[in-house]
Image: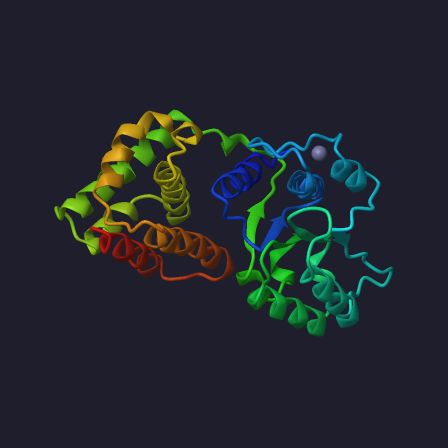
Length: 293
Ligand SMILES: [Zn+2]
């Protein structure tokens, strides 16, 4: 999987937690394996022998139909020669996607170049993404986020695909930084520091890195809530994580934990889209976590 290990790991996490977003945007330049990853994920979701490892069996009826490009629950939007995808095409596919799957649990649409939608077509897609039916999945690909309307971009979960992926493994330095963040979170929980002080400490690092570390912590935290200890990304801090988990006031449906997760995801998106006030961005997160104390 050429340079998409982190994207792959995210897909796996969403699947394992049964939280697959309705619109995934695979973002990356040519040659980063965006399409391969999107197709693998589609094939995996359609496969009848789905296991926890994101690999289809390639042998069942669904896999064979997918391979032959004739799976009734999968459609690819073909980009026309003039590279303008019009509203009629999008409308038709949006109508189709909202009907009941025939052969599997999903209806999946692959759009290989999101930037080729014209304005009306983009709006039509946006409407569907705003009120998605259950088990509908849009796999959207693009090489350039600046060519995508911000409204549409904000509706997607972004999966960045890179050629180099040296940072996909958590190294000692990163582990130390993650541990540090967890310690400060624990201090927040017991009231030794207040949200604004926490932000001051966090801002000694780059905000992008802080968000990544917090996302790693939170993903593992959610796994602990779902008793999926064996799936942890940062197993060495499991003990600290358990303590942190026990200090949170979270109800059975984990809604509060998901609110923080969504806030983190959103913060990362905002960071890529605009140049936000970093301090406010982090404080919003810190306050949301503080409310769980
Ligand atoms: Zn299969």
